Image 1 (tube, rainbow, N blue to C red):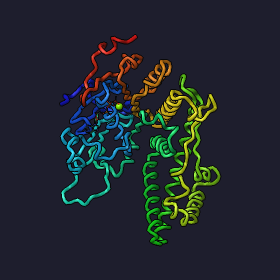
Image 2: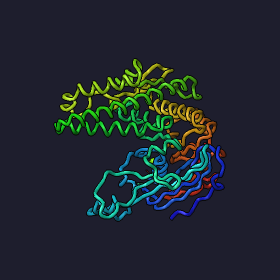
Image 3: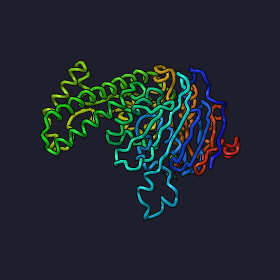
Image 4: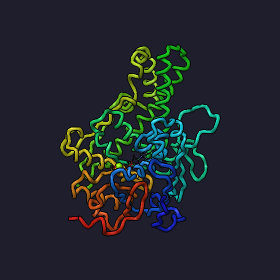
Length: 417
Ligand SMILES: Nc1ncnc2c1ncn2[C@@H]1O[C@H](COP(=O)(O)OP(=O)(O)OP(=O)(O)O)[C@@H](O)[C@H]1O
Ligand SMILES: [Mg+2]
């Protein structure tokens, strides 16, 4: 059982504060039965052994942004499993999946404090099974959709799984880019899901050969409208990133970024309405082929985010592991700088096991940039010595078996060289 860890005064009542989580409560979330933290607005270093709950804590924070969180988990997986349920061979799946969980937070932001609550509600008795949906409350009121979160705050993360971002299939990079866009275009999340929904429905209709032309026309019109909005958001983001990356961030490499795709190309050549019309025509023409292939042959779901190391003039995929990590960090930091200018506050940064890959020069530069941005970055690692450069500038916390306590000052650093 976790006792409250009070490390800071209450949330300031006035606006103008940098964006920061000032109160965080997890209930039945992964290995946390209940956790209550009241962090300060500055960076937070979470250290602890493997399996302690560091990534789980960052995952909880990632639900303050729209989407499926940093693990892209199903909502039922997130609910805390008791050892009995987790290990029982014959445990009924329902006994796991019906468990509610919640993340609730108070944020300080340039617009003033805001309360966010999110989680999975227990199904009501008699409810028909429906698509899983995460519920969001803002200042106590149910939000219309998760996209409303993007209007209030932005959260950006880097996880060890993203180390393969430049090597993986295009979908991972598209998702990464889309998440960056959320910070600048609050409707982007809604456009992405409207596009995907219409595309899924069209594929289903084509597969079933239902021949409902009016319905197909309507779905293709939706795909064209949402698809052009998605492509436009991505193009703007890429342009912003390249602009911001003209100046190096300390020793970090300069990324040169492009988005390659048919719709993005049309937006280069014609106004958005004409691109929408072209997209609609092309979808109409490709119905037969799309029916055979089981998906749309063309659209922003096929676009590719290409990243090059500008200094080496090499594709990111050809760079060393450390260079790829540094490129990713450079993109995240450039976005944070842009957001600080655009929204008056940098995003909340969730940096899971990021420093272990970096040499001391890059580590120091990362810490200095986080502090210069005044970003509330949550950094994790197993070795506190690697965070020595943040001593005095961050709060250090120990994570152990689903418990988070203020770190004992000095003790874990004794072995430092
Ligand atoms: N739904 C769940 N209910 C209960 N425990 C869970 C659930 N999902 C994951 N866990 C457990 O939570 C523990 C902490 O996981 P987490 O990934 O946060 O560890 P970590 O501190 O990041 O470790 P590492 O340093 O290895 O990355 C793990 O032991 C994991 O098995
Ligand atoms: Mg982890």
